[in-house]
Image (cartoon, rainbow, N blue to C red; front, side, top):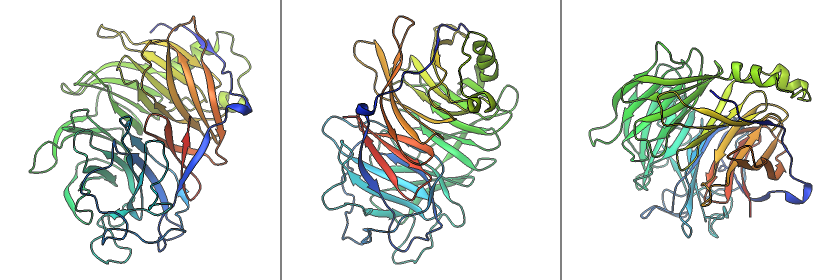
Length: 412
């Protein structure tokens, strides 16, 4: 692996702050000790989804859950479409309606439009049982389909019938950390605490079927914290874990194509003259908390536990991933989330959201080569540790943190 560039981050000025456009809160009646564990954004408003005031609607608007601690996922909107934003936890799943600028609908304000996993007037009991919803993702091909991970289970919902789970399977070995959906919608990848990744076939009306299990020789030796399918490459995915490894998979064959050690990367680049890193970065191990492939599939980004962001380029050969550069001081503590924005048409810069335990949300322009400088073009003090983030449209990001609300920031 060839290291091209290492740099310290140039931070945005106070005039380049991000705008907080919305706060999403849970309904009255949710336990104040409940935790928000995940959020996701759909591509557009699904048709046939009941709105507030219907039997599926939730009429409350003030109280919220207490602690946002786990994953987010989502995908970009078309220019004039809107979104459904979902949030999950030990209360089940709640959904809000907003436009492609992240603004809530005029009827929605702070309240969800529906809650999944609750039938009729059942008070507080969900089909998730004692398992918290720790992962959620929308289908890229079916606007009504939502996937959820709760404990070791994967569940599928149809937004037109929110009280019923249309399919369920318990196939993972341990608690699920993230769900990624294949761009054709037929497969999902579920990463769990055992280090394994389950590839599930969700294309059949008969239910969820196990397609492949990625574990064993060459796989993660600790918690697998993140997994993403590679765009434009139908049989490839990348994963990262608390073993400080990034793995590039051929999931059809169940084989690792290439492995990248962040311990080696950070040790090698630490000798290249970066001596002004904060002590917190030096002490924090380079766990891989988050991965984000670019929409073109040629690049991917990693949020690392030492506070850095790494940008990699896929090559054409079997083992040819190269490090484009590593921003050594992107955050003063662990980078818990990175979210790629659509690639620019001229190919000069890649835009990226990041969030960390230093309580900051940042928007980056990362250079594709050593002739350009990477910089944070906008920043916001979130006032709480960042746990998960998801793109909402092309200019907004939803942030899950250690407060009682999910926050939506806008770059425009």
